[in-house]
Length: 165
Image (cartoon, rainbow, N blue to C red; front, side, top):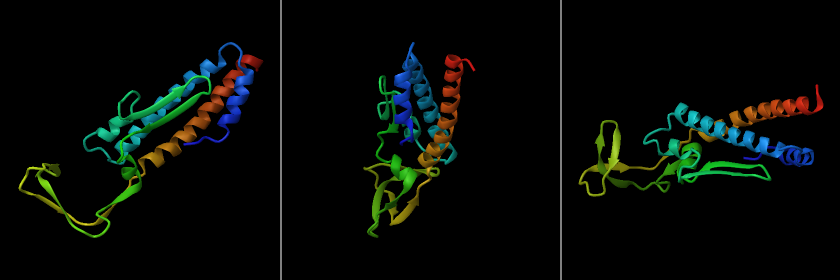
């Protein structure tokens, strides 16, 4: 995700830095990253993309399958997951795109299929397209709106405090 104007803003803030402004913005950016994680998790739940909870839980700061990076001087924030299938849930994917059928051993437990490589029963999968639910796209759209509004408030607060409005 790229936010237009952030590099220019950071350059101006570095020039204006007196008395720990960069540290204040780093803390604010960290908070914004945590809010983005909340938005992603809310979208995953809203789109009913929760089965085992692995995808949902991969978007947490500090999770081993998570990608959450912050850095000090350049005020960098990077949020994501390292789960391979996260993009399939968002974008959609084909199962057996060449039309062949595939046997999967296991058993049904209620409405959920449990894979068991040693089972003598199972199910036959045929080619089909699984629609993505757009959880990431929705979360980014909401976050960009929230980020812009929050950044405006933060800058106005700083201007008011330092230039006595």
